Length: 203
Image: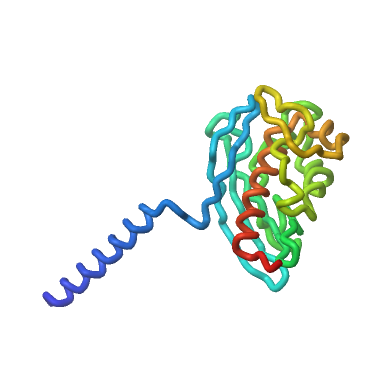
């Protein structure tokens, strides 16, 4: 009986040591840091969490959770979950969904933002699916270099300006009232693309 108690204590201590080691680790592979930008132009480093990562033959499936809008009251400041597929052949975005996965059979995403966005022309989730997300599809990290905000002007309230000009000015105008949503989606996709290249780059 005494040996059993000693053995159990050793197991408990071992788990405790491993837990301390993990909690003290500065690098956690499922947490990606991104520079969150609010509507006033303030930048704060925030966490985006990789909830799911699964390697297929030609692409990798991801679920990534992040907060886009921080201007709402805390009790309704929900997390967004984007389902993303990124190619292993050229490291480009194949799919972004806040609803079903690539098969259309399983709910893999969650919008978590206002719908419609209560400013400007009030774009809805459907508008993002039909107009903004297709702008991101097919893009690689190199395509988004120099793009920090979805505008060609200095970002309202700050001094942030792209080094690369966005050609689709009609889209910029349409989503002008949803800058926090568009800007942070770009920023999260960039850190996810960077992560993907570090782990799956076959070029």
